[in-house]
Length: 208
Image 1 (cartoon, rainbow, N blue to C red):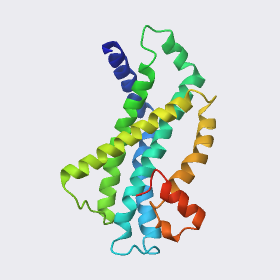
Image 2 (image 1 turned 180 degrees about the vertical axis):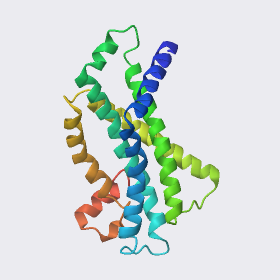
Image 3 (image 1 turned 30 degrees about the vertical axis):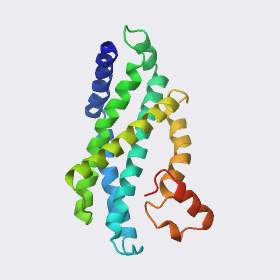
């Protein structure tokens, strides 16, 4: 078990170092959550009325969930890319635990998600979102969100090992991710949706 943990740390370090070598990844991690928060807050904020509250506070929880779902795609596409380039085959030829590749990949993506949530929280505070509970409850909420993101990373990791290329994974996953994130009561009240979509939104895993 210690051997697996040590090997996973090496793989996680390798994935995090990639940020320095491919800075575009960091740009996506930083700018994407800011763009989503500002876009929805100011484009839809004046068009959607939330009885008894502000749209900014209604919005942020959904943006958090949406962003970690999109972030999980990095896990799948990263593993698919490693498979395509033969890097996974090189790992298999080394005296290391085979499961360490996935453990390390998902662990490094937790770091991405923590960074993303920090940036989103700061951006949300700028547009009017506030934490109305205790600090402990807020941290517990973030912990649940990170656990949800970690579980999704494993799902995407499984898919990433099956598909032939990262392009296939991105195209296929967006067909699932987009309806899951947008047909929900995360951005608009479910009562305003048509009956079929309203039912789907109410049973959606992202439903508030």
